[in-house]
Length: 239
Length: 239
DNA sequence: TGTCTGAACCAATTCAAGATTGGTCAAACC
DNA sequence: GGTTTGACCAATCTTGAATTGGTTCAGACA
Figure 1 (cartoon, rainbow over the protein chains, first blue to last red):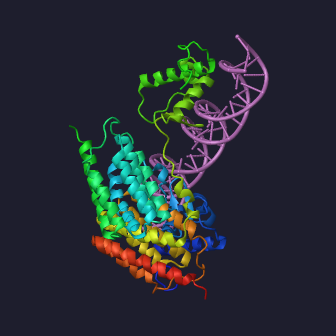
Figure 2: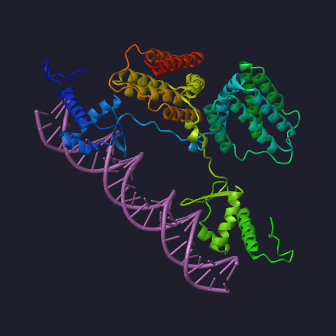
Figure 3: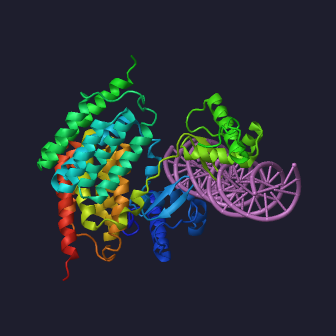
């Protein structure tokens, strides 16, 4: 902003002068070559020699352009045109960077939202399928079977939202959940008691969806997951 | 199932016999060592020598255990205990099963929720980064640059939520969005006018996050995306 | 005195070459 | 016939050297 045209206004400002000079020179060099985005520029040492400036000055000019978002740098990688590529932590490796608490928190955020969408968009066919799933949870002879049925119920709710993209996101979340809580499986011998909290909660969720009670569906799903969370933490405690 | 105890019932079945023998031997070896999940087993050649069986027989036994999900193998990597790392295939092909409207609807659901989490969990460092991103959108010289900065802003909000899983889901959603709206890019010559609706909306979102106004952050993000949606539909109309 | 330069050094990253590993097949062998 | 053995393949890991942005500091220079 200041000092770039200091040779015009008579006052001498050597620091800003030199920086401004290499900056305009670098800008000109970039414009002349017109690199496509994500092109790797020469290393600082080379580029300094190419432009005939010191490395320090070049670095200041590069820092300015980097702040402007016209290029980005990284140790060991180099200097690249365009703005920094966002690093996508693929869902394939997220399971090692997250933890059960975070998974639960995310479920508490996403699933009530899915339930609301289901209440808004579910067809009668969807609702029949939901009822059948609930029956399956009641009939489960082992915890293992119960969890399979419970899993399917939650997925059918996501299906009932009628939003395939939302369903895909739910599947992704679910895959992470399974990977993270792997090994927390319950014993295979006994079965969930008929008084298990989830049974009544499931019923209330489906009921709200059937009645097109959007707020209610979201609320009941939230309460259900909170109950599941509480149950999980109790199971995790030493006894 | 059959032939594993053929030495009992008199009939001779050398193939199943040998396979079953190495299978039980391998099972015993695994049980004896009691490896924790995701442990790398010795290479097939070594393990064959350890167990004193041929590599072919060992491979058949390994294949059985792999089918049972007790271990998994990969060329160049090795053989590991536990079940294979999760792979989310659904998101890879969802971009051909969805459409821009569904993507927009899903953004309208997810991103306000992310903004709320950001308002709850953002650190001052996060907020500084958000402010810088907003500045970048103002300084954009082309629509292309603006969209890059806008993209980064939305992602930084997801980062500010402090929930890595939520961030991963956002990235997935974003990847789908880019794949679906590819080719709807604007001209590269002109730039967003200073009166562009998003500028004020972005400011309001960041402001709400900074003030820890959870409801406000969600509401402003929702309104912002509705405005973007309206703008998209107008642009999509023939003129 | 104060600035700038160049060289040296550091940690992160890339690159290339060799070693490993699961998968496959055909000849040898019983 | 069926099994074993050895060789080969492509994918992957491993290792070490080279490269790169970031930093420091002595010394040249004005």
